[in-house]
Length: 304
Image 1 (cartoon, rainbow, N blue to C red):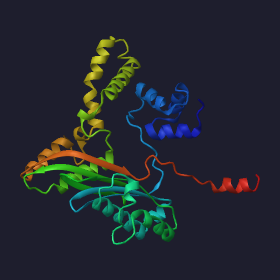
Image 2 (image 1 turned 180 degrees about the vertical axis):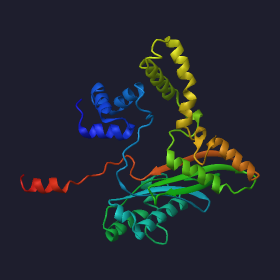
Image 3 (image 1 turned 30 degrees about the horizontal axis):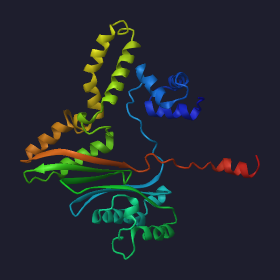
Image 4 (image 1 turned 120 degrees about the vertical axis):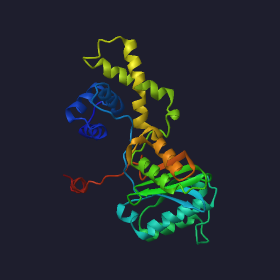
């Protein structure tokens, strides 16, 4: 499979590895991005452990706690300009309120729910907003927590929304704890919430890469395979610390993990708090965005 300059650029952005090494990795991997990342990691050049979809669509990710229910939604628009318009922002908040007031399981079901403050349904209101705002608007996804204590956090005006769900005991206010955890999730986007959630296939792949790195290290290459595998197994804790929320270093105090911070902060308040679950929406993740090349369009129309 051939690869392009755009593929090299994408690989460089994903791994922070130099352009020539990226080109070599793609050549060795027959143009396959995933295999190229694995190649770079095996050579010890890249630490990238997760694949992030390109963020391309506009709109807003929004989270809130409404009538005791934690709600998170993503609504898409065509341009950033429209996404920041007060009417669009209010529409997103109304969608969140509709989610909280209903038990709709998916977007299609939500379209049949009454739109807040109106006799129309959500599905009927969408084209009305499209006419006024002048852009295509889509309610893409939503989720809710109806139990325990939820804390919502919206980052960068709606680029990222996070909803954290906590089991709180002792009658304490865990809002600050929840917000700190949500900010950690927004910033680092961990692959897993806890090391117990890491699947065997992921661990096997990580160990394989660690062994391959030793195979390519002149100081380690001559060691017996069993020794390399034992060393790799011992390094898995580092993987947990980098990829699992509760085992990550707490961003506000690197001397403790997130799990330790939650326990310590709750104890200081006279109660206990346990992390239950969380949801992170980043606007447009996984959606391809059309890129208009005006110069090329003019040239095409002119027959150049």
